[in-house]
Amino acid sequence: MSITPHIVVQGADAAASFYSEAFGAEELSRIPVPDGRLMSVQMRIAGDQLHIADEFPEMGVLAPPSIGGTPTVLALEVEDAAPVFARAVAAGAEILQPLEDRFWGERHGQLADPFGHRWNVSQHLRDVPHDELVAGAAQVFS
Image (cartoon, rainbow, N blue to C red; front, side, top):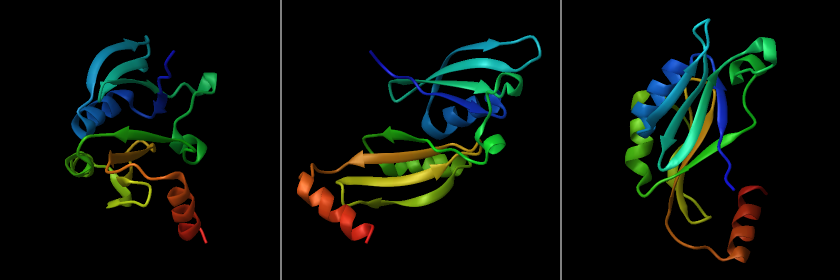
């Protein structure tokens, strides 16, 4: 069993280009529909699949700008977060949380892509005992 994110954007062709430039995504296939929109662009990022689709408002399929944002964050775990983060920013991503070492044992930052989706970019630094995670969360959110 697996789970594959299927995200909706305004401009799937441009999004596929952005994800290739920002995250090194490889396009595997695309399915256009007669009016020029893309029903699906299948991509591979860091060994995992991602599907991208244009908006289809007539079917209730809407991108973050059409619904006022996104409740979802896509997490990209990489060997070395700094160059991935920098490449995404250079490609047009906005920094929401700077790349820093975090209490949960990761070098972590969050970006917003030009299509309204949020991305965590993280690098595992160390295993953290559960009680230390709970204490760190309590300190941050108190």
